[in-house]
Image (cartoon, rainbow, N blue to C red; front, side):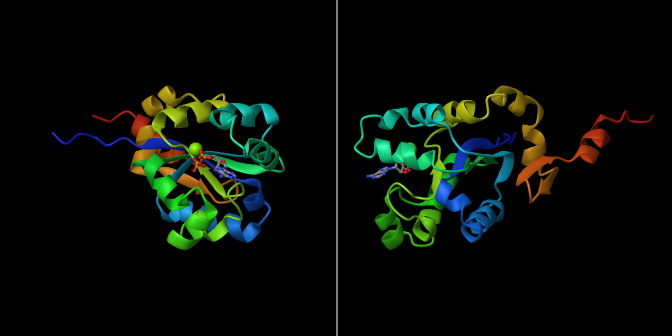
Length: 187
Ligand code: ADP
Ligand code: MG
């Protein structure tokens, strides 16, 4: 029997200098949709100091920590939960290398290659594992229950029974499809 391949979830952030630049924002959103990611949750917010301290706790002792904190809290970011097969690796490949000079020279067509301004202002974030994705989703989407999503919603995202709203930049389950599935079969 062929085993079913579940979608994976990852957390993506488009950092403040991207949200300030309509062209860059739209181009990256197009890349997300063209690469078949489903946007499960979408939120625009100025990240708080408390959130970013939790989020980047592994970098607390790095020389760039203070400038990273200041930058991440400097204006609104777009934060998305993305679903796709192998979402973690696929999104990181689309982002490209962390260091912008490497991205610009070795991977100019990646998001960081195109829109990174410096090692700090490198355009985007992507979880580095499914465990990190779970931890990061819990920071920014406190109400989102991953287990429940896999039990009740993953199938619709996997089958593409979705409605896409380009303004709020989110996919929601197509209600018609749910009603059709729940209708009792006439004998
Ligand atoms: P990634 O975002 O690719 O997972 P890291 O987890 O190593 O990379 O770093 C987290 C963030 O810290 C980076 O996205 C970048 O904004 C910033 N950063 C990383 N390395 C440097 C550096 N050498 N100088 C300045 N900022 C950095
Ligand atoms: Mg990282």
